[in-house]
Image (cartoon, rainbow, N blue to C red; front, side, top):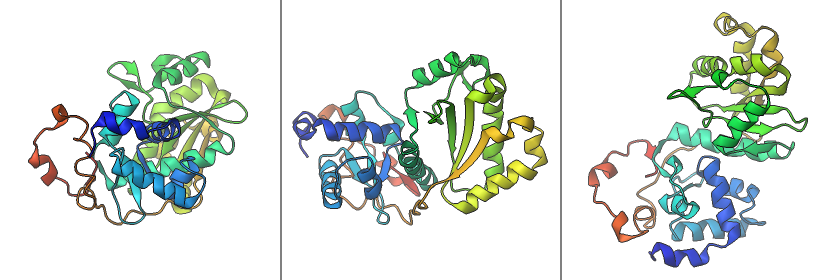
Length: 280
């Protein structure tokens, strides 16, 4: 593979824009999602550009069906900052990130205006009159990177939790509400909470918990219940059957170490511990 500096000549602004958005959304996409993210206007063009980005080392293919691509270290270097999106993730996490892309594409058509920069999210909460002490905290500071934030068409703020394909809806819902019910109480009509699911069955499960779970209602749901909405994407997100990285593509295994010679570190033990994990 060519050196990083040589590969940059192929990276025009449309490709950079696509990779920038994909990284902000979690780093994974199918070919159909890439088309919706405007990588190209026609199917053959999308597939061709995805293969080109993989050959250049800015994407890697990580599954057989559906065909899923992930950003690499070269992508984060191109964008000027490292990101965990290029690293190895469980299949469940990859599935959730594909769901996040699905939701972004659908919500943009409402239209919803998404906010990705953490500093801007904090500023929006502050402008809405939300005390920073009511936000989720990490190391004593407000931390909302794990959730989508976007403006609804009526200019209210929305916070979205992306579901994961595990049988723990109650635990995830309780954590989400514990983190954001204080925010709802402080600003009330200005913020909605969304629970985004990959299918109707998961959506109904969350709705049942919101209606009938005594433990959930003990959190102080009360009059705030209408501010909590469930949403199922259409069509359902396809399920990844089997990961193929790092075995399938000769470009995949070297994509993260071909940027410059000083990036190459011999670590065979890391390659052995793949199991159900994806990415570098």
